[in-house]
Image: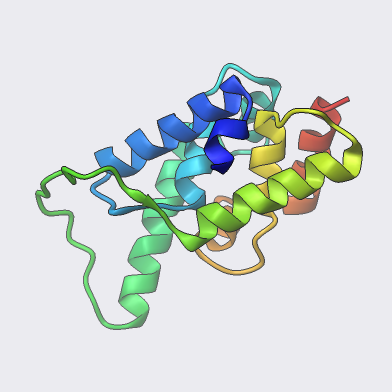
Length: 155
């Protein structure tokens, strides 16, 4: 299993992403949960995200705004009603799996022996479509600048 081959720090981030998804009432862990987990990490990648307007609060707000905008586009009002957290652990969705694959490819291309939070953030930000790219746009962050800042933390 891929999870067993990840460095302890990344396993902790992924575990945190699972908890974030569960706390938000999601049945799947997606890229946004991985990125939210990176914002809470004690790592240079979290500082780089915050410096570019994507700390926990900013990212969470942008994700909420993106959800509201997407629902409004199909005529659904986003009313935050009470929900019951999922009893079962959330499964990994396509965007999270793709982000982990991109993170692994980025690390391999650089010759890095272990994944770092910055690799994971780069993997999530590498998505061309979906919730995260739209939320990053809403937050006003420049993906190219942010990616350069994240790569700089890997040196």
